Image 1 (cartoon, one colour):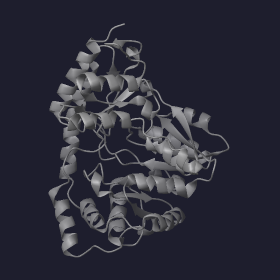
Image 2 (cartoon, one colour):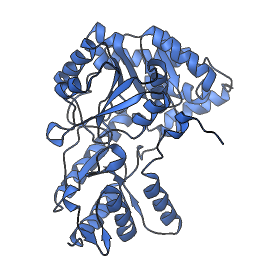
Image 3 (cartoon, helix red, strand yellow):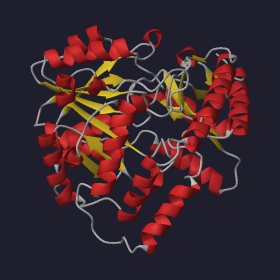
Image 4 (tube, helix red, strand yellow):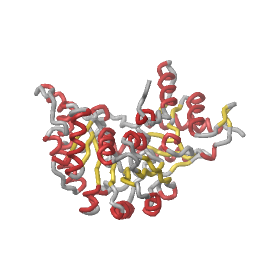
Length: 398
């Protein structure tokens, strides 16, 4: 049986083994504490759910335009103007089945076979696979903790070749929770524009920033930057609406037209009821988001404190999102029982078996020396889970 080169080039998730094992253990009644969550653990606000009920009562159960309803696209334009000082028309907005779908559409729209896309590492696991699915080539630029896991303009410049077509910029970042300062954004923008590159700006975590204001969108740097940027965003993180699957792109008109045409053939429109509720969410009050952000900050501070009290590991204070990257490289070469700790996957497997704590191995994000922990879980889980991890580290031996 023949399978396409494109389909067989996609790597399976390296986190699936840990996730599947953790779910099986929970199903068997084990007290597993998971730090892998990539979604807020808060409910969608009641008034947003009420909007969905109104959509049903209004019989909004038919197809919408492939790019999304005019009402939702206008609400997105209003949000971009008020929050990001960016002026878009509804014709420049395409609403998709989550921000992941919007990202995939963007790569499909701008890449030809062999085009290179620069991705700072550690990176979110789906970026390189999406690039490969679009027949592109991911090129990774390793970042350093000492620089806040932010790619420098100099490192960016060195990675550019005649085949480079685009940069992926995630701000705030997943998995590191890193946050770019305005001057860093501008420096990266200068390099991208000098080489006439597309900038795919993933801004899905922009509402979850804890010690500063909302980060600058790279599209706001200059009119030229605006014309080179495809903004990706959605409501999953900002409004705790992961299952509603509403994401969107904002881009130059000709790009949006191409994305809309592709989407019309691939999926047609996103869920009509979720679109109605999303428009209400964008126009509604922001108190729920502010409360969620406040609680995430409290959990973040405690998680970082507890991690940095454990000998042999450490993490920086993340500026946004809801993840910590914990350095475990100094534990390599040690054993837990008869299990050798020779990488992040080995550590995560053994930790789950021995202490029933699930973390995400850094190898999935392009750097084996780290593991990712999400603080989108209760304070009780953070305290108990890191207590168990501290026990685990204390039991390691040569």
